Length: 187
Image 1 (cartoon, helix red, strand yellow):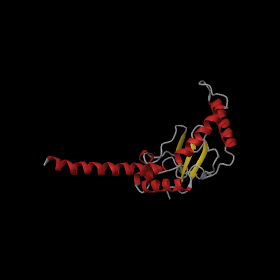
Image 2 (tube, rainbow, N blue to C red):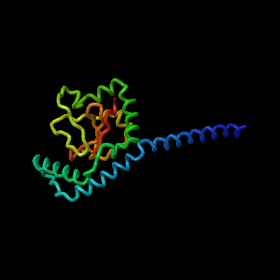
Image 3 (tube, one colour):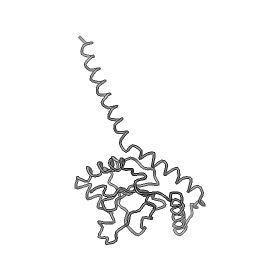
Image 4 (cartoon, rainbow, N blue to C red):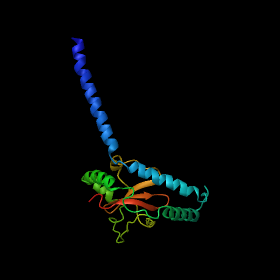
């Protein structure tokens, strides 16, 4: 009798494992290509930065600003033909939009997206989004709510997601360079 009771339990466990592994495979297919595009940018970035003079640990604000400018200029020169959609490809953008639009249906997330967003903080100036453009240092930078970050691919430390209006921006936090963006990501 005991063996017959084990058989359904084993079959159930095997079925659950199969479903779990299928879900993991489906989840790994999500945002396909994005991690590789980010890695390619980071590899290029490391190469570019290694060719610049090192920033001293005792650097003052002016020296840090100069280094940021040099890094941005060198990155632009290394990616002269960069355009919107290089990293956030159409397929990847579609996945991001699905996640972001579902998340921003919740009032708390929608409110959090507006916080620090330069187009909703009473700021009449419009930030013109362009790949390889400098994000204005005097404009606020929004943060992406933690609940949303958990749904998005993790980024290397030097990159971050932020919102400008309804667009999701991939920003190089050290050079303050817009790497790519998804227009109307939450609209």
